[in-house]
Image (cartoon, rainbow, N blue to C red):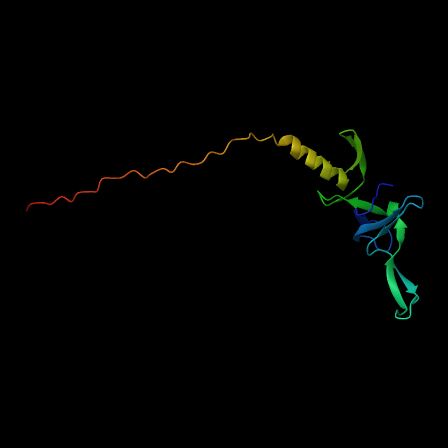
Length: 146
């Protein structure tokens, strides 16, 4: 199963076709996923305590994992998930080349930023000397004799 929790997916089959949502839960054994706002079912909840009231709650139900496609956060398109080895780790990749595994992209970005940034040279701060402004001779007025 190529879908993980917190992925944004597009439903491609069923009565909710075309709906985008976030994956709330996955069940690899049953090959199903629960998507936010898809296959809404009504569930009756009984009051368990004296101060509670019974109610009817709407909850999303499971749909087959083959009926969803992962939406790439970079290009924004629904895509088939490919697998590639990046830095010795197998990750999910979009057709555009972007990495779909969020945890891995954060670690890779941090590592790249740390490697790119060279250590700064330490310089000793010296007290700035007070520079006295140079005294300019006053302009003398010239008088014209007419």
